[in-house]
Amino acid sequence: MGGTALVGIQWGDEGKGKVTDLLAEHTDYVVRYQGGNNAGHTIVVEGERYALHLVPTGVLYPHCTPVIGPGVVVSPPVLIEEMDALQARGVDTGKLLLSGNAHLIMPYHLELDRVIERRLGKNRLGTTKRGIGPAYADKAARIGIRAQDLLDSKIFGRKLEVALKEKNLLLTRIYGRLPIESSAIEDEYLAFGIRLSAHISDTTHVLHSALDRGDHVLFEGAQATMLDLDHGTYPYVTSSNPIAGGACAGAGVGPRDIDRVIGVCKAYCTRVGSGPFPSETDPADAEILVDVGAEYGTTTGRKRRCGWFDAVAGRYAARLNTLTELVMTKLDVLSAFETIKVCVAYQYKGHRYEDFPPNQTIFNKCRPVYEELPGWSEEIGGARKAEDLPKGARSYVERVEELLATPVSWVSVGPSRDHTVKMGYG
Ligand code: GDP
Ligand code: IMO
Ligand code: MG
Image (cartoon, rainbow, N blue to C red; front, side, top):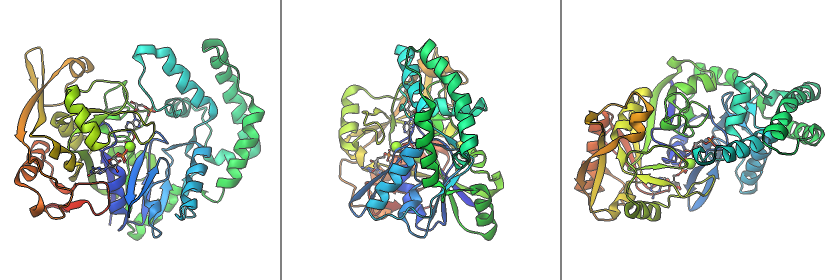
């Protein structure tokens, strides 16, 4: 049995946490391969709500081993706090594995994320201010500090000194901030290393053995396709590769280790932070979507921007990720509308784009071309089988399948595990 990748196909917050949790029931390993605690995955189990940021969703099942792969950036105090909070609620985190190659988010990365955003002013990205971009920048510049460095006080001290020399110049001379003392960080981080030492391991080897044994491995994407550093709406993106291909680099497996790629989409779109969003709704419809869909960020609490389903971006994501299937979440939220719009193309300077446009200017300035579909105006939270869904809801799902040329295997009609409808495929 090969691995499964699960990715968001929009701008994040599609409900990946809920869907990963559903799949984890039949999974041996759940692996995060990119991003950090900019992610916020909400899972509702028997009325209990869990908001996971760094710990992979599989932690909620005792049979599952949660793995944080080499491609993730990790803040040790955030990880420890999240593990402690889970333990306090009776969730065992003893099996969690953290790759020794994962890079660390350090206090100066947090400070830099804040001051860079401030300096960008109206051009700011609206980051989660979790230090993600600066940590990945150091990784690419080859001056990052990795989880394994926490286990060797000499190496850690040396790397910290090198990093701080440069960072303190930046912080004091460019951004007018106070320097960061290495002694304050060093003791604290070495203590985090002692605490995490039982979890730090060669996760790449562990996953190779698991895949070779035929265990089922699920690669849990954070963020989403349109926030991908190389393929999303640059520069309004995150600093990693959430796409399915990113699972290979970020977890250390090969393309042939993944034979199922699940794309998670909301029945509409949301986006947090700045950047173009062609199918953004008018304020009145956004208010309904925010209210009914409780569209507030799990990580920062920010109100999410809302849009209609964007089939142009969806088709692009389906191809980029080579999706084998889609899971559509939050269909219940659309019961609030008499008619529902779907963006089927973009219009720019008299040209109609059905494929994702080749440059940023077009994407920034294009207008959406909508198709308007009839709604169903009835509650669907109780639906458990495809036949329980009203005709309008089924037609909506079928239209999305057609536009993305990808079958929908499950539809989610509420936040809990049981709010799920199995469709024709999967
Ligand atoms: P993720 O980052 O992709 O895991 O998504 P988030 O957890 O940030 O945001 C999705 C939100 O929608 C969470 O609050 C979920 O509990 C909730 N949710 C997931 N699926 C459904 C659904 O089908 N209907 C409704 N009403 N809420 C859902
Ligand atoms: P999950 O996994 C939605 C957005 C931020 C900002 C941009 C860059 O819950 O879907 P960063 O802090 O990553 O440098 O911010 O990316 N962003 C997300 N938006 N869901 C997320 O994660 C996100 N993680 C980052 O709002 O626009
Ligand atoms: Mg989220």
